[in-house]
Structure formats: C-alpha cells, structure tokens
Amino acid sequence: MSSLDGISLGRMDSRYRVFNFIRSAGVVSRSEIAKNLGLSRASISSIVSKLIEMGLVSEVGLGHPHWGRPPTLLSLNPEIGYSLGFEIDISRTNGILADLGGNIAAYKSMPFDVKDGPDAGLKLIQGMADFLLSHGGVPRDRLVGVAVGMASPISQPEGVPMTPPIMPGWGGYPFRSRLQETLEMPVCLDNDANLGALGEFTYGKRRGVTDLVYLKVSNGIGAGFILSGRLYRGAWGVAGEIGHVNIDEDGPPCSCGSNGCLEAMAGGMAIAERALQAVRAGHPTILKEMSGDGGITVDDVIGCAAKGDETCRQILARAGSQIGIALGDLVNLLNPRMVILGGHVAMKAGALLRKPMMESLQDRAMKSSLEGLEVIYSSLKEKAVCLGGVALVFQERLRPYFKGTFI
Ligand SMILES: [Zn+2]
Image (cartoon, rainbow, N blue to C red; front, side, top):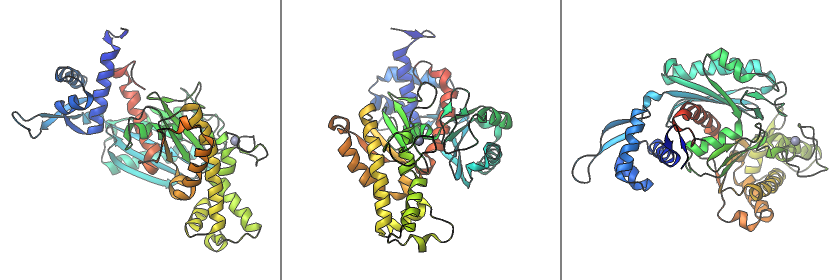
C-alpha cells in the first residue's frame, strides 16, 4: 500500500470520511459515526483521537444514553475559525461569513454593476468584509481566509480572470493578489459555477454526491463539475464553459466572439433581448405595460410569463429547450449522478424554464446517461456560490491535514 508521511492512504481516507461525517452531522457520538460509516468502534476511537489531537474536532459534552454510560458528543472545533465567501455577479455582489460547518454568521447582498470595473469591485469587497465581520460579531483574527467567485474563467493558481466575455475590463487584472494585499489575508479566486458545485458538494442538502454538475443559469450560463469527489477545473481553469457551446451555427453573435452560443441564445440577457424584439415586432404581450420605461429585463419576462403571457412563456420555453440541448451533450460526456440547477434565472423561472429543459434533455441524452440521473434545484439557492467560497477557503486551510485524499 502506498503511503504519505508514513500514514497509509486507506487510513487517511477513513480519517477524512469521519471528519466529513462530523461536519455534516454537527454534533455526534463515536458510536453513531461507527454505525453510519460501517467502521469498527476501535477504528473510530483511534481516528477521533487523532482528529482531536490535530485540533479539528473537540468533545462538547455528554449525550443521552440508550443504556449504560452517556456517550461523549463530538463536534468540529469552533476554534478553527471563520471564512468569507463572495460572489461577484453581473449586477449584484453577495457575501457570507460562515464557520467550517457552513453555519452562516452574516450575509449581505448589494447591487453592483461589473461594468464599473475591478477597482470598484475590490473596494466593494473590502467594505462588505468589514460589514460582515462586525455584523457577525467575529473578530478579524478568527478569519482564516477569503474566497471570491466570478462569472469568468480564472487562471490558476494566479487567480487572474481570463478575458471574461460578460465582464469587460476584468481580463488580466490581478484581482486575487490585489485583494490579498488590501485585506492582508489569504484570498482564493475561482469561477462562480465551480464554487456553486463545491458549495452544494460540501454544504448542500445532497452533499457528498461525488459526481455532480452545478448548472448556473443567470445573465450568463456556466457549469461547475465535481468529478470523483474533486472539483474539476480543467488544465488551466476553463472547464465548464457550457454557455459557449454552439447551439445554432447561424445564431446571434456571442460576447466571446463566436456566434450561436448557448449564452447568446438562452442566458438572461439574451432572454431580455428576445423579449424586446418581440415587443418591437408587435407580438401580443403585456410586457410593455409591466416593464415601464427602464427597458425590459429577464425578471420582467419571467414576471409576465408567470401571469400567463404566452409570448413570454414561449421565450422562456425556447431558452429552456436550448439549455436542455447543451445539458444533454454534457451528461453524455460526463455521466454525472446529479445536475443541480442554480442561478437567478433558473431559480426564479422555475418550471417555466425547467420543464422544456427536461423535455429536450430527455430527447437529446442517451438513455444510459439518463438512467439514475437526478436533476434538482440548488438547496443553497442564492448562497451556493458564497458557501462554495467558504468551503474552498477551509479546503485550502485543511489540505495539509488530509494530504493525498483531499479535493
Ligand atoms: Zn460564446
């Protein structure tokens, strides 16, 4: 058997499984861990002793006995600290302060236009970090690190956005290192859908599914992959750009320079553009009265469709169907166990988008790829990306403890 630092890999796997089980359970006894993981009481005792010695787990009191002595209860050591996770979306920025168990101490969401550029983004994150720490009552020295997700491929490990099509002016900007200098603390930068996948994998209702796709449908469209229990970023961080899969070779131009990409046809901005064209062409719709003078947004389209407006329903149905085409290719390629739908547009449109998406997915994907595949909504909703950031910070912090088995 191979070994790292004199410890067998098999042993380390069990240690990580026990650690993760305690993280999921919150408070738990040794016998409950043994029962759930199918390990012997002796193994659990020895692994838990090691986790306590490492400072990752602590004993937090006594439980109620079924018989005999009351069991000692275990929990993650709160002294490990807190992490900040941010999501810079096209028109909003969200931030979360949470502990290793994903327990949220503070949350804030603010309007922010990415067109204002990365310098304004840095200032905003700095201000939000101060707010979250003071609002959550967490002293700065309890903070382990900060992670930021954005709608861009990110070159790793430098943490530099790579010419993001829908974030003009951000490409090549050393966001990670600048934020690290500003906050004087370790910073990770990653793609937003990657963090959504990691958030669901670590803290979601269906946490622990080792092969999952997080599909973010917002103004842009992107995917994050957990494959064999690890976040998959590709060779240099560009994996998951499903928004730039070609749907129609004669389709409209895309911000990436190509045309007929999924994002240019079914992303939030494309949906709003299509609705504007429908109004101009004189299609029957209540959109004009609903949207006022501020132009048409994807939220207007979803709102009108929910009220039964047939033109808006058709626009959303077409977008859903196109997303299903790309998703069909994706499940054929990767064979995930689960697809988790997230992002503002997918969550808000609900069945208006999901139903046609599922129909075209069923038509396009091979039966063998669909067998056992679950398509669910994000349980972490608008907090998925931020919580993925929290997970990423702790992952980096804990990496030395679980070398060889960690994501
Ligand atoms: Zn494109």
